[in-house]
Amino acid sequence: MKKPWIAAAMLALVWNTAAQAQTRELNLYSARHYSTDEALYNDFTKATGIKINRVDADDAGIIARLKAEGSASPADVILLVDAARLWRGEQDSLFLPIKSELLDNVIPASLRAAPAANGGTAWFGLSTRARVIVYDKVKVKPEDVDSYEKLADPRNKGKLCIRSGSHPYNLSLFGAVTEHLGPEKAELWLKGMVANMARAPKGGDTDQIKAVASGECQIGVTNSYYLARMMRSDKPEDRAVVEKVGVVFPNQSSWGTHVNIAGAAVARHVKNPANAVKFLEYLASPSAQNYFANGNNEWPVAKGVHTDNPALKSMTGGSGQFKSETIPISAVGANQVKVQQMLDRVGFK
Image (cartoon, rainbow, N blue to C red; front, side, top):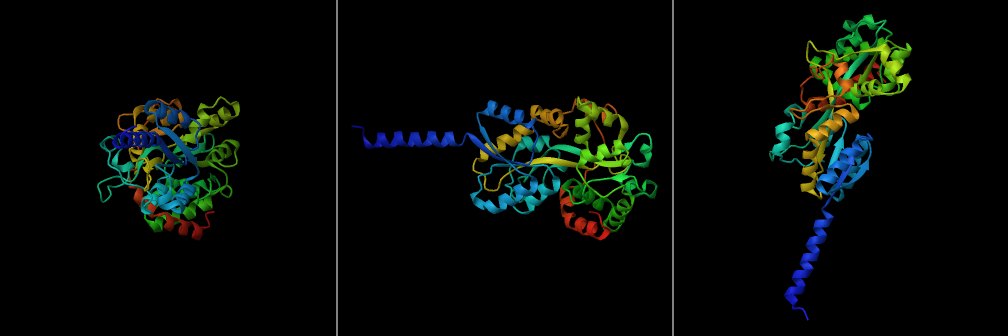
């Protein structure tokens, strides 16, 4: 017969082993719906033995779910694809500020949350995409669209195609321009864009590129990775579109091109905190950063990591680099309500 203390010790060992087994996992809420990310997650599991359980939704859906679940949420890590939504999640106290010397060293300060009261950081940018202007190479001169302000210039009347003003990509751009110009001038700018539209806003970013190529309009606004996808496509129809359009990184002589970010945060009620931090640090590693660049045509953000993506290099004249704006993400997020009200006043649907 086993002595009681031996039985208790064996039971404690079993419990401890079971607890360890349960923590070899990570619950991920992700707004990234890119097939190339599968390899990213698989490599993390192979390297660490930590299984990833993923829930997919868009940014707004994830924010709403976290609020509804409260402290019962199983989420460990949150991946979002819009700067303003990351800011919103931080404002709503949905993220747990963490301390990581590695992340602080490799992620630029302008691409992560400001330090929290505990000295930690609520979220980190992991990749960027530029909000660029595409144009008809035959009918439009690049110098006529080399700044966001010129989208509202009367010379471009009847030429502009753009998606809905209330889409997060545009809300972030408009929030940034509002920060640069001030609310009064920004509203006049939005009004000028409405006057310059070739048709009512509709479709996604790829649709704007195709509309320029087809002659439906002469100027379009898109995130850079949509154009890069078409540049790397093997489909003849995509190649034909690319041949007809030029691309401009706006405001290179002033504040720089607007960039939006995809970023990550540890959930406020994280169940596997060590695994969560390990995953964020992995996403900032050179190998993971190259997945973002080559898999989904995004720019890596970690210091010292440069892209060899042929499309990104081609659209930047071979360098893969461009001047980007450096305003705080918090300013872009704080302008969202103001921008929505301006859009309503000027009739930007």
